[in-house]
Structure formats: structure tokens, C-alpha cells
Length: 270
Length: 299
Image (cartoon, rainbow over all chains, first blue to last red; front, side):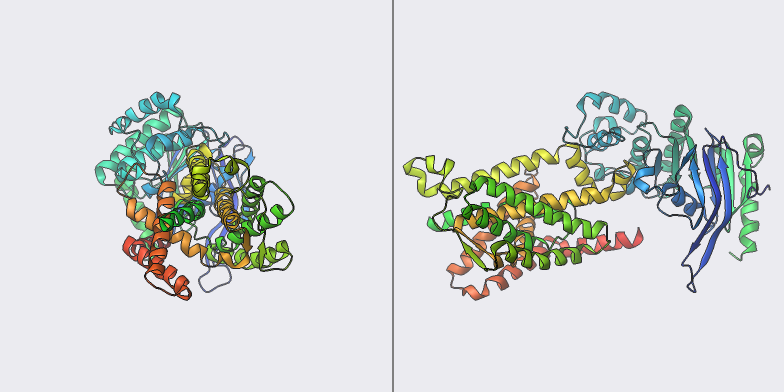
């Protein structure tokens, strides 16, 4: 175990959390101090898996990063860019996010083609030009073929008619369709059946490797955390209790992770 | 025959408002009550402009723009000041009463008899004698058709698809680096602009503006949209806009039929409320509303 809380923050990092404080329900009986002087840095091209018990602060971390929540103290950087005061839709220009709920990453009443055309236009203006991009339809088809879900023949089907696994695969594809600097995966396989979640996870690995995107993945699946990515973080009560990268990470088997996980859980009586 | 003509005329005129309500209610999922205030706004502005000698078609455009501005206010109250959707609409609806009185110079009814309107000047005056008695029907139909085609066209643009996505899944819009609040304001502007246009055309048909003509417009618009979509949802090639206009005609037909069967005029608004209730229940909207609430509390 190597607590990372007080590690010096590297300036070349892709993502930096610097001395973050976050308290929920401040001043009430339900006050929860979740993060206190929390710092973390993620290097360019790193694929970080974050595991931890419920309430350990991992989803809060993603929400702070994406601008759904704002820190009480401290700053958050993406490369040289200070994200701290930016709104969620402003940060979305550089950050792609896939949610646990497959319904969130796509628009159900629009077709696959419309969803992909809109996503493909990210960063440009959404004016009075045609909403669907027929010239790119072949490109979209080729991207959908990579999913091996047969979606390439269903471009005109409303996304609401797809299964959860299909929608999540599409959401992943959509979030990485335009160049982004950071991919945030928020338990994105948790709502899928075992087979679909394996498919989506393999797809994730492929997309991340091919595009070389810096990725932060929160997951409850210790098997995924152990076998995917090149760095693992285990969070507990707002701190990183385990931080292992590359060779050090490879030494941890799923059994080791489970053991550490149980130790910290017993500690707080779960 | 005269009765059918009457139903169609009013069905098309109110159909324009129903299309506006389609944008706010069906597409944005925003129950917009400001419609009760922006409908007479269009009428009052038209009356004042036509009395000032402005071309009636220009008066229609002005009514649309003023309605859109009022819709922006509803949107800004909701998005910037975080007031709930229902209250934002109520605030604008209430404020519009005074605004409309100021526009008409304090009178509740502003007649402009024998002044040029879209029904008796310009294109209308060029109609051949034989169909002149149908001029109101023809012009109301053309106006509704033009609005429908423009709105359909807009909804297929990038901006239009994003508007649909805003009602469908706000997070998807956010993830495309677009501010969903701005899309809501835009949608409410379009919805209220069309409502005011509808009010303008109705005023020109009757050649007077009535400040209280807005009472019950929300109910009428919603009923038209819901009747249209529930009656015609199986006809898959029909667009939401077409369903709204056809719903508006069906709704008007119901009202006229009730009057013909001897229902006293005093019961009109009661009947309107009952019709909407029946439409809501038969459409299962109540059930779906509950599900939507559940989704929100989970999210």
C-alpha cells in the first residue's frame, strides 16, 4: 500500500486534483466531510481504474472533474487548463463521459445516424444546417461495425429501441467520436448483464488503446480493475489507500485486491 | 357546411398555437403556462399596429417576435433564476396581463373594424369571386401549412435535433459541449412566438383584440396536442406538427358539437377542462408522468 495523498504533484500531468476539500450538507446534522486536502495526478495516456466502497469518494471525484459538482477548496487542472470554475458543458469540449445508466449517453427518440451526426459535430456550431450528415454515413457504419453488434444496418433505428448493452457500446463510441483529451467512465458496465459488460469492457480497452486517450474508470468490478488499465487506485473514506501503476499494478491479483478491500470494509464495519 | 367551415378555420388558426405547444410540451417536456399571456399579446400588438397602418403580414411577424421575446423571459426565469417551469410560466402569464393593457392603452377590447387584415387585403383580395367566401379558410390553412413546413424543416436541422435532445436527455446535450439552458430558452421562444402568431391571426379574423382571449389557451393547446398524438400515434408517417393541427381541428369540432347539442356558452371553459382531462386519462399520460417522476428521483 502506498498512500498517494502527499505525493508531489507532477507538472507534466494530464489531470491534477490539488488540495481538494469537499463537504456535503455543510452545517447540518448530515454533514459529511468527503474529501480533505485531496491531491491526485494522472499522467498523459494513463488508464486508471478506481475502485472503492460506496461513499469512498470515487464518483464524487468524477463529478468534480466533469463539473457536476464543485470543490469547496482546491483546484482541478486538465493539462495546463484550470477547470475549477468551468461549467459541465464547457468542460465537455475536452472530456468524454460514459455513465452507468446506458440511457444517459444517447438520445432515445433520435436515430443512430442522428445521434452520431450530432456527436460528430461537437465543437462546431449547431446551426440551421441539416442535422444528419449523410456524407459521413459510411464512416459511421464502419465505426459501428467495430462493435460487432450488427448496428451498422440499423442507422435509421431510434436509439431507444436498442438494448442496454448496445446503447452503452454506442455511447462509448459517441463519446470518443471527436478528439477528446480525457475519457471518464462512471461504472459504465455496472448496469449490463455479464456478457454485455464483458463486450463493452473489451471495446473500451480497444478504443482507449487505439486512440491513446487518458482514461479514468470507476468500477465495482475488481476483475476489470485488475485486468484492464495500467494503474489502479483504491479509495476509502476520501483517501487513496492503494495506488499502483505498471509493474506494481500487475502484481496485484483479484484475490489481493479483494483482501485489501475486505480489510478496509471491516475497518468501518461494513 | 358553414359549421364545418367554421371548425376548420378555427382549427387551423388555433392549430398554429398547438404547434407552438408541441415545441414546449412535447419536445422540451416543459408545461408552459405563459401561453395564456402570449396569445392575447399577439392579438394586442396586431390591433395596435394595424390601427397605425402597418401591413397586416408585418403585424403577424411583429406578433411572432414579441411572443418569442416573452418566451425568452419564461426561459430566463427558469434557467437563470432556477424558478420551476410551472411558476416561470405563471409569472410571465400574470405579467403579460399588464403588458397587454399597456399595449392597448388600457382598453380590454381593441377593435380595428374595416382595417386591412391578412383576410381582406393583399393576397386575399386577389382571390377569385367564386372562392372569396372561403378566403378565411384558405388563408388560415396556408398559414398553418407554412408554419408546419418551416417547423418540420427546422426540427431536422442540427439546432432542431439538439432541441429534441434537450427534452429527451439533457445530459446528452451537455456532453456535446452545448448549454442545454440556451436550448430551453430557444424552444420557449419558438413556442410562444407561434402562440402569439396564432393570437394575431385570430384577432385579424374577428377584427378586434380581446385581452382576455388568452384564458384557457394552455388547456386548449395541450388538449389539441394530446388528442392529436393519441388519436394518430399509430399513423407513423405523420409528424408531431401535423398531429397538433389535426388535434386542434378535432378539439374544435368537439366544442362546436357540444354547443350545437345545446350546452350553454357559460359551460365552455368547463367543457375545455373536461376534454383535456379525458384526453390525458385516455392517453395514459398520468401513468407516464409518474414514471418520469420516478426516473428523476433516481437520477
